[in-house]
Figure 1 (cartoon, rainbow, N blue to C red):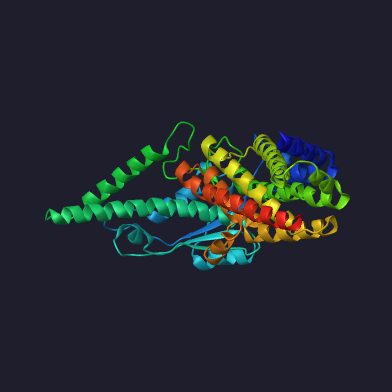
Figure 2: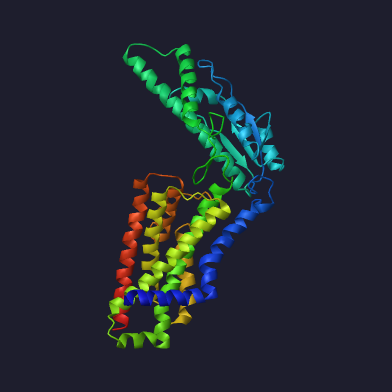
Length: 425
């Protein structure tokens, strides 16, 4: 009972602080809102008031249909880029050759050039053959080239699926002493296209069987906000950063009470130090719980962010709360007085946010070494978990980062408690 009394007292003190309320609840929404308005915001002309900027694309299709299969992969790529589903985002024109396409970018007459090489169709159908679609774009742009790259990646995945199917069929026929002639190859292409159409066509989905509209953070239908997929990772980064900041700020009440003498008076009562620290931990946990619920619901209502399936959202929320509470206790154990608090909290949380990739969550960043470094802080694991949850990954995949966060949170709390006990012994 004393643990709850201590926790409720600390919560009331935090809620009385205008700075704490602004920090934990208002700032995350405001930062995400700035990005919301930067890409059209409420002044857009779409039905949901949020529009992506138009990207001018110039296509140089140097491909010719494969003589054996009759497939024209270059024409298929061009057709998809010119489809009605992408007409609201991409303004596509054609160039005579690669030089003309590159010149259009250099002269700022277009934003992205898609250069389809010669014999691209052959590379997409013949085993062992390779070809590369080149994207040439204005280096000052990030969003438009990212959209075009995502579309091209989806198209290439489809061609890769067909090529794998063709290779498997050819090997099966070879074991039977048969060869795959042009008629068989064309029939296979038609069959694979029909199968792809059955896989991609669902109620409310795109009518184009070759492309499925999908946001960077998971599946969505065309009725969703077009920027919801981009704002999702951004809001996830802000959620993680400010929840961890809020946890540390609330845990700092131990240092404040030590300065004003109330902690010493509390220690003279028959209240074990474990109970005092337990009450502080519960207050931190409850504060970040309220903070998380408010931010999750408000961002879903304001920005139409789809956080994922309930099981994944619950797993990530609870594990993040434990990690933030434990991390807050650990950080607070190193703060000697409230004058150090602001500087230390700001420095530690900003550094962890940068290492964890929270400030670049909505953009494509190089993988490899940076991914490994981000695993050294709980923020990186939390961001990975939320991205999995928003992409509607299976609960078993989400449980991996969630379990790591739980382990980190418990470890942080144990170390922080030991440091506080030693300090106030």
